[in-house]
Image 1 (spheres, rainbow, N blue to C red):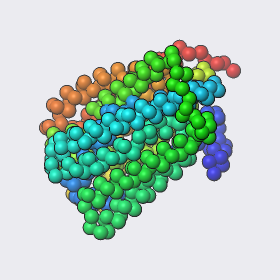
Image 2 (tube, rainbow, N blue to C red):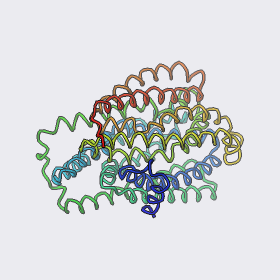
Image 3 (spheres, rainbow, N blue to C red):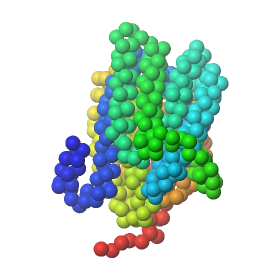
Length: 452
């Protein structure tokens, strides 16, 4: 079906899609988009059921629990998927299977260690999270219980990177859909049995754990298929002389992820701590609806990054420029139309599905859409720089943005609440994405153009 779709698109848009590379990106992102679309639809139903079960404040507390775990995990994370894509991809491209296997082993061991550290931090900080973010110390056990998701994700980033570099996007999609179906089933069971916060947290946790373990299992099978059953015995000494480069790449991606905890990943926690769980509930819904706009675009960085890395390794600069340009046109077109749709129908959608008490989320949604339009259009702004060997540049931009964002949060959110937080997030996207995209264009400007 994917092949027929690619052929149809090529006949209809020969100039736009007349390149094997962009077709491969669309094909791979198509698998992820199908999964993301189905998962997003299921997630929307999950959100509706959870919101109706818990009310605005309870919905905000649920968001505080899940986002708290995510933030702590990202704090300890080294984004091993990106390291795996860059270096396993490089060694696979040159036919060095041994070093490719060692990179994956090192990435997995590093991620396993950081997962244990992250869970320890969650256990230690759970009372703090319950007191300041949920504003209810009785929720402390649920912060810890949901934190088990981190242990289940012990090599999920490395596994994701491996599956992407070998174009196993269909399998990633299958796991994503399976996880969403399981989570929705459990939440529906809780809804029709008058469940509460405990049942909803357990449903989310079980779904996340099942998805993480499923992804890990298929990645380990892929590793054995590619490199033989004894791949994990390859000595780490094969990477002698590459240690500093690997550490530098991992540290830069970790710093970038850590900075993003302030810039965009902890929004809901700031609102809950500086205002209250009710406003956090409004903001959680606004973010969920805004993510509908991001849904088809979200898979593109994952599908594009491996291709960009390969083309950069081959010095195919025309292909790099082509993918960035056409990808931006495609992403902007969709995002603009989807934003107009939410502008016109967002308010009745909220009233019908979630209830009138959630209507204050609509103004925050409109503010977020401004930032998402820019972020989606230049969705490749960070991955292009990673592929071009400038992992440090997004880190510097994010660090600068984080300083401004913290000042803005402390000055604006206590007074303007979730609307102020939405404005700051939109401003962050406008600032950081513009600088990263400009730098990518600047680097590519110096690369040779092939005249045919």
